[in-house]
Image (tube, rainbow, N blue to C red; front, side, top):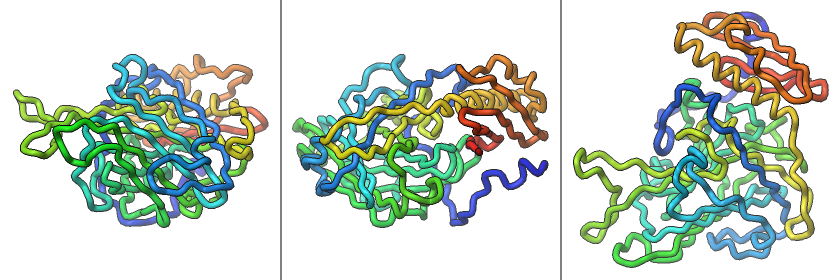
Length: 371
């Protein structure tokens, strides 16, 4: 292990971990680099009048906040349009990050009532947050129409050998669900359900830069997902529909704010960007500011994908950038000067970035900037 590789990205948090499968359908394509890369953008306005967390999304602060784009299939525009509409809003103040979501649903049902159950076995709404955008130490929160919560911390992605820390909780989380219809009653047609949540910065800042809440103008990586099963109503109860021939569960639909390109929410580099504005909701508009170094991180991520492919084919990481065809990776407006340190089982790639920064990526997926 070289000195540059030793200790890079080391985690200081040690907790008991319990393995859990990622949510929804999963499929790993042969070449991640070819997947569409179109992260959504959202300006999150401040509020001096915190919304009442009752699940209804009818406070004045919410009326002033813009909706996200309507959710699409997790794989993007090549897949069928979702059967039911989903959209979300965000706000923030000194104490909380607020999220609200609205889901059309003709059959509102849920079965799980114990916290930290595998909530995506029901229909659910999910929040993913990576405060510093390094694709490590990120949060996931799931809630079903009964208001049951599953929250966890992931030190690394599943693809990089990460295990979820389910014992971790968003202490002080405030959350409520409102249903526009009847819960667990087949035979009628419901309108849908809404959820509001307030997540305290004192918890979310654990994985944030300098362990602090965001400053106005800063951007965090965020995504939302909705897992929707095909429901079967029988004997006055709902259940997940199965294939009549095989008896196996039909796959869930996965609808998201920012498309992943593949059936895997645990690719944080493909999540959306949320910019925290100093502007008060309803008092004006703020422009989303593109960060050119995000293009630099994406260029390094392409090489990370290629290293994964190379190791899969050769049983080791490439020790020469030429083996990764790195010369065809370019960033507009930057003379890309790459260097790499590598062993059989580890590597780090460095490159000059914009604004006198240096960008880095390593074998476990961590990407970051130094100045």
